[in-house]
Length: 345
Ligand code: DAH
Image 1: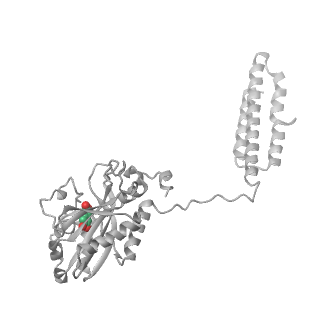
Image 2: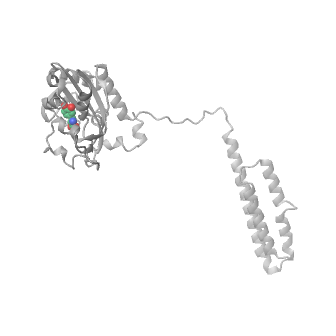
Image 3: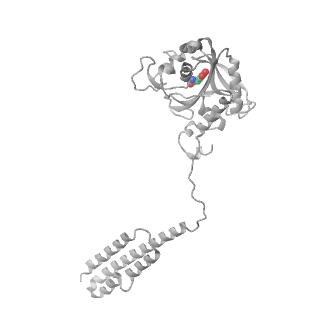
């Protein structure tokens, strides 16, 4: 008898066993397999008995080979037992609470938008949204933004590779939410009071305070005899509710093409209450938004009933307001999907 082919057969028998009992097995079955393989009438024993018949100089080789197979078999049996043990462990305590699925929650930017929108809805503003793919006419022309204005340059606006509309010009990703002033006035008769949250896009290099995409909230109101004092009152109420109760506002003269007069609005610093600290750079004030009385050219672009009306408008950056309130140091934290950051809110 050729012991090498016997050895080969034994190896194959072990491989077959492993294949046959790949799934977890009943411990009793496992014990049967063990006894059969290692037992007195098993193949290991038979081969061991055979050693005597093998030429002396080959005995050691055969002995070692048999031992290897035996060890491999025993290791395998032990692994199977461990697997079973683990299985038993898993179902040992049926009173343990089940694993919870994480439902997640609203992103802090969505929460901030909802909070701001709520404040304005309480004051009677309606909620609207508009297209992120805009046209030159709405993004610029109707808003009294001159063709020579730098914001129209390719380095300030994402133009899309679409055939331009003969009427409304090129297509682009809107660079602000202000185009919705015109779109809404075209569709609805005055009076209107609307709040428009949404994404805006600018090809800015990304850093701690800039992103190529961010969120704005546009608000405007048009009626008969609307005055700057109405704008101040509305924004005061907003700042009290969003920031803190005894907040003060400062309206600094500024220039926007679509409002006249225009202002930038600062709040008294929410950390030092105006005394001066590192957040407000020791000025006591923090800039929060832009606003003004809607420019007559914008009302004229809509025409009709709007020619005889006046109104105010304002625009604010959601990320900025959120960063101020929670002292978030870097705008990129909002977008990098690190749930450890997002879970805090
Ligand atoms: N659209 C301006 C921007 O993106 C923000 C703005 C300023 C909006 C003044 C307004 C406004 O409605 O009156 O920078």
